Amino acid sequence: MNLFAWRPPHRLLILADTVAAVLFALASSGNPPGLTVSAASALACWLLVVPVAVRRIWPVAAYCGALLISVLVLALQTNWLMTMVVVAATVYTVATTQPVRRSAVALIPGLLVAGAALLVSALGVPRRADGWPDPVFVVVMAWLVVGASWSLGTAARTRREFAAREVKRRAEQAAVDERLRIARELHDVVAHSMSMITVKAGVAAKVFGKHPEEGLKALRAIEEIGRGSLVEMRHFLGALRSPGSAPESTPLPSLADLPSLTRRAAEAGVEVDLSVSGTVPDSMGLAVYRIVQEAITNVIRHAAPARCRVGVSAADGSLRISVVDDGPGQRVLPGRAGGHGLAGMRERAMMYGGTFEAGPLPTGGFGVYASWKLP
Image 1 (cartoon, one colour):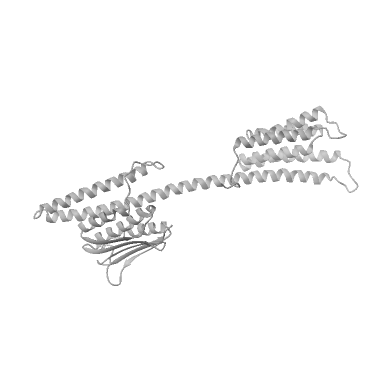
Image 2 (image 1 turned 30 degrees about the horizontal axis):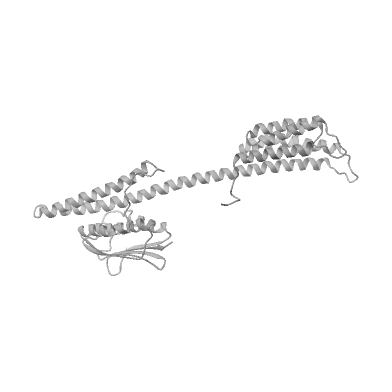
């Protein structure tokens, strides 16, 4: 725990103010050697410290009470230093709890009372040969002390407001990031499943008349893909409907699901050679799966029938992903704008501070490469 960032509980601060007020009153109302303190002066000392004890509970009322009692102390011409300290302590609390304009207006009577208290005290003390005490100096000193206390309170209030806004901004940014993550997941799920369903539906339409068994097999595959996609979509849509809550979910795909992904790709006309080596952290398994899934989906869309090599390697502190096919290098169908697949893969790699490259290969085909450091 950072001791400098730790803030004591509010009740403990009130208790500390009360103890300090009592000690200050005892020290100021005592009988110094050779001096007699009147009952009125002693009562004024005790009344003057009450605003200090309650300043965190009723800051504005404590400040107004401190000013009124200071006028009484000023009339008795006693404890001028205590008056300045009490006014400075209460104006600090007002500055920390009230808007700057309101606390600036409240500062004016505090300056007048503190300056008047020290001025009366300076005029009542016999002046030495060197002119001390100088009335102008003591008034300026009172203003500096009270003004500095107000400035510190205003700075503390500004810092707290900034910290609160920063916490709110981070919470809003976290919510936006979470929704963007869910949007990426939905895109990957829908894009992959619809590509597979489209291919399977085309196969079923072509072979159903001559080979009904193959057509039924394609229809069952469409049903299986659709059910699995609906389960995943229900999970993500539940998170969107209830932000901040954990919806009932099925396990998200990971590296263990890559073989089933390659089998579905083979049914869509893309033979995949899968190679996984090393140990990939579970926290990165979903990102790896989605990158491979999107890359294979692009192959199915734009290059099928084709062969594809998928490599996932975790070694020497780095994770490397490669998806290379031997189909045509074009990844955007003629007359159509590019989608969000490559951008989504790049975002997933950049999420871990990694690199991402994708493009046609000199020898033909298309390659997708992603890598980042392992924790």
